[in-house]
Image 1: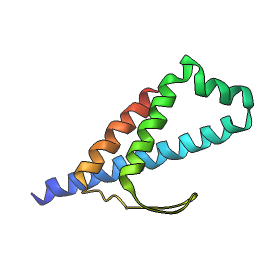
Image 2: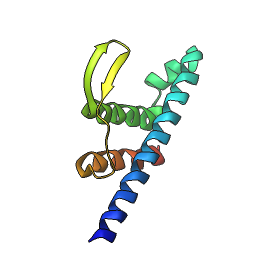
Image 3: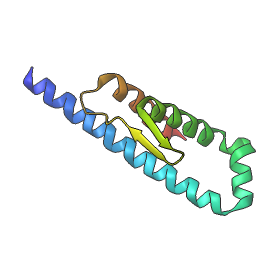
Length: 102
């Protein structure tokens, strides 16, 4: 039982690590795209970027589940997800898989 708990906690930590790595990648990508008007327009409308748009939308849904409070437009308070939060880890894990495919 203890060994299984350690394995679950390790898997939870891996999922969270992947999530924050993927989130960091997407934020950097969006920041780069925001600079170029033509690419920004293509990202919004071109079918080539449909998978990426879907991944960003799903990420927003995952983050909304973690959102606790919005102070101001750019000040958000999030609930910290732990490696044993099975429900959230499942949602995050599904999103991680989608990012890898996109």
